[in-house]
Image 1 (cartoon, rainbow, N blue to C red):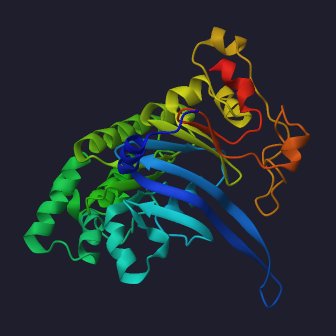
Image 2: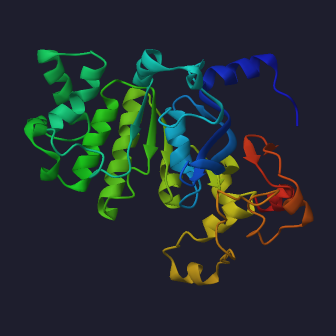
Image 3: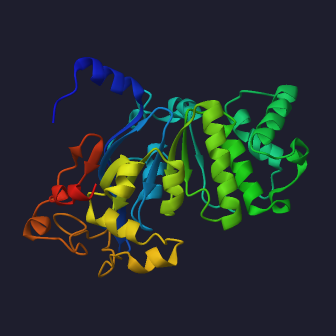
Length: 342
């Protein structure tokens, strides 16, 4: 594979909004009266990736694989065990206190549960305006105008500002959460499964809203989800996680048409096809066993205990995170075997 020229490398560096390098988030396991540390839950275990300015990077995987922890660690809601998170050229992991609070204006989060993420004792207007007050950005008439504008952007009537969350449906509450995330005009938003708690009929509306807002405001998304068909719709590139590790990352078409990792292949085979004839003919990959505990992950490749293609090297040696073909990254010893399927 040819190395990029200095000009290409510089252009690529300018396009990267977020660079995550060897990110690790371990939670201690404490035992006994004196709460002695006896081990760690390796929620995220040394992942690296970039998010390009203006794109949507979809992050998928089974429940408990570390997707949400990754999103929260990027925003420094969880402090890192190791690694770095560089947003717009600045390492967030080295910031603390007031400096970190100031940088939070650039990055926001849309939470999974629209029922739990809104304070039931605050009006919609108070919820949306809280970031403006915390950062001392707008007061009085200017704040009221900003609230009205944000509610209009997400498709809500500005007259709803004096109502409380319990007066709204789940889809409307999630729109309020989106308005709150937009209040500080961030450049990067982590969407932590923003549609998983919503009715199917509402999910497409919220996804379309996120796409419209992205185009208008030039936003960059990390879209965390387990609905692979929805991730394919909204994402430019897709990253696949398993047990705290990154398995594969590539353009969405490459991931869905020519996956190079057995785990990605298994995930894609589980997507239902609306055509009964095609559904009956296709090959389903059924993984054996359960996901191992992140407190005691397998040696070598963490997926080898369930992989139908595992060999001795998979049990002994952790696969390198490498670029198997241009823009297509994978952590598998035998990725080249599957290239003919691309």
